[in-house]
Length: 570
Image 1 (cartoon, rainbow, N blue to C red):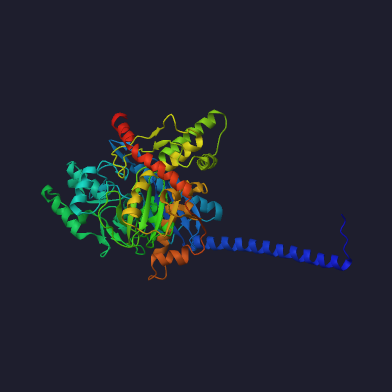
Image 2 (image 1 turned 60 degrees about the vertical axis):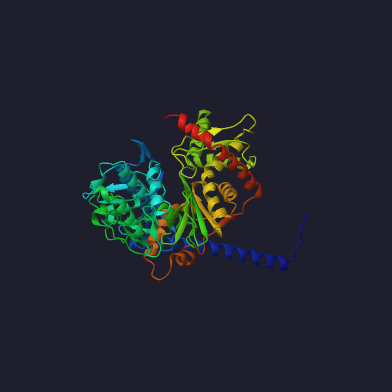
């Protein structure tokens, strides 16, 4: 078919095409100008120190994130590490702690130099965060008296139960006070020499500022917090001192705990020595304001914009925890639920499970070995995408399969130690899809049991749950599984991949906020997340029923896991 048009029509057509091409050219030029303008603004921010840096010590990675004054990432660096089981305690050694800090900073600094041709000499504000809880005890010379005891240790069961009864307040095994009291019960030799105890984040902050400080969220994982005073609970501090008075230690509890700070406050500044420790090239100038050090729970809340009441977030990694900001106190003490705070001091119910992704990662590592043995090397992201998406093809309940990814003990289900375990019956529907779905389900098994207490027994209202962690880099799968487990809509924001280090950088930026009266909630809503996109998934009722069937099998099978602990010796 031949289309015939007259000269007039052709002329008009030609004019439209020319105009369209001109508009495309202008749009392309504007886009180029905008990119160039953006680049110049970022270079100026770096040069003038209008930036914020967050460094977080996670369970498998230390990450540094530098952001600009629009709260967008400029550069990042990281250091991979693993905890060690030494003399019966899960720990990280001081050499790795310092090496990781320096490496993460150095990688971030080098990325800035590559992309912008600038050497970082000053930073507007800095913040440090780390895995909450645990025990680091120092003498008056700054010597670490015993190896760092992490949140993963379940060696403090007796102490945790005694203190819970004493205070009528749940003291989890992970908390610093439980570690301290267990050491007292064990009559450990280092106790008389204690000058201070702190968390990993508190230690890094002290090392680089000389100030023994702690953010209120991290502090709430050391000792119970009084919401009215925004400080350690004085009556419980006195109870503890009375409890151990007969021991005759040369310290009182308040004397050895770090000072509590609230988000927005300055908790010190980078010293000359601190700058040299952080930046091995010694380009970084001292004097940077540093915000209160926080735990990974607090930075997770910030990174997901879930610090308002009735909001919650789920953080997925080696461990998994859900944080729900409460409207009112719980009616009674639950050993499965920690009561902590947001970085600005609001009460939070925290359900923390020690085990989440380690066993899943181990199995995927096995599949990687198989692939390589077959002569086919596979990229990590591709491996995760393919294997996790298989779970969407599975039977709703995982085909009758059962697994426990317990690398360590699990307080929620009452196991002091763990043994990774996979079991099935001859009737189980054993295929790859069900295998993957079962390992995703079990990653949230203990969390599901703890969350059930909040939603069923306490009728805690949750408007939204936001999720973050490496699992959610694969679209949809993790969200669908969590939505099924919680039976609640689950959102993942476009910033979720930045994680806690980005959240810590945001807290550092909040400290420098010009409007000192603006609440953290409003700051996040109006300035940080106003234009951030997110994806929300509602629970599929078929998935919900499938998870309920799985969790019933999970509860019944705990005796199998206990038998493995009792009889399978390491």
